[in-house]
Amino acid sequence: MKAQEGKTYALIQNAQVAQIFTKNELSEWNEQDLEVKELTTDELAWVKVGTQVDSLTHAFIKPDLSAQKREKLQEININFEYECDSIKGEYIPSDELLTWSVQESEARAYLASKVVSSCPLLAALAQARGINLDSLCQKVLEKSAKYSTAIALLVGNRQMLQDKIQKAKNEQELAKIVYVSPLAALK
Image (tube, rainbow, N blue to C red; front, top):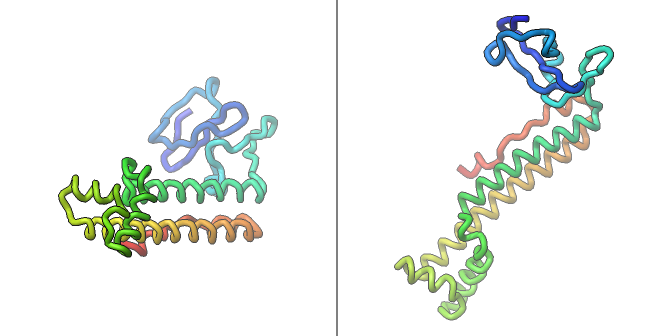
């Protein structure tokens, strides 16, 4: 069988969609070896890898609203976790992750008291870098504030989307829920 231009197909294996493809990915296949089904316009909106297929009728089994909500929540969480990981890398490099809370608490203590012994880690870092301790403490707190703001935006956004998912009464309402990064407001 030859794929047609502008059509999308689903490769079926073990009663579920294993791959979705167009002519660009797979232009021809042997119908004796592969079970392939062309997707309708409606099916394009919801059929994806993993969608179950009825073994008797060969029809795609549309997940119920509850399953769609779980999938939407998983999609939201994946985006949330990706963004959290990216801001951790931006604000807290992995080598500083172990000492981040110590750095923040020492910076607060030093800026309040100006007593060098209240911040042994930061004093050593400032000396090693050849920079002023006051400047380093300010940078630590600025970075901490930016990180906290970014995390708060991400968590708030995720919680708002979770609420919308739970309240969705049908798949049309659910389809309108899309993860949009709240971090653009910080840039």
